[in-house]
Amino acid sequence: MRPNTPGPGGYALAWLVSVLLVDAAVVLGTDLGGPPAGLADAVIALWAVGVSGAFFSLPIAIPGVLMVHLACRAVPAQWVHVAAAGLVGLAPAVMLIVATGEPPELGLALLAGSTALGRLVVVPLVWRRRDSARSVARC
Image (tube, rainbow, N blue to C red):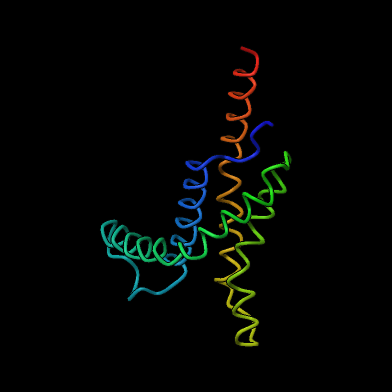
């Protein structure tokens, strides 16, 4: 069976890209006490938001990656994997809608988009894994 997933390293990279996208959007879209005075302030803000974002994303990211992997590992079309990742990224928004009965904030929709983009970034890794598997099969 040919590989249809990016592997553990690819999933880690997809998660990192997703976290960085959300963090950049949060830093750029919120008032953190005024505009950064310089590059150092912007880097510190990105670092602070990034570390907390990465930490708080893990309880959703780990089961989400497992769900997408198990549901899509036999599907060769990578757009299906990207769409599934986006749907899993919507899970926190859906849970909040159910729990509170109120529509979610725009930031929660950002989670779905960043999750899908993170998975999209690692599609070339899947192609590389397929090429490697083909090379080994020929030997």
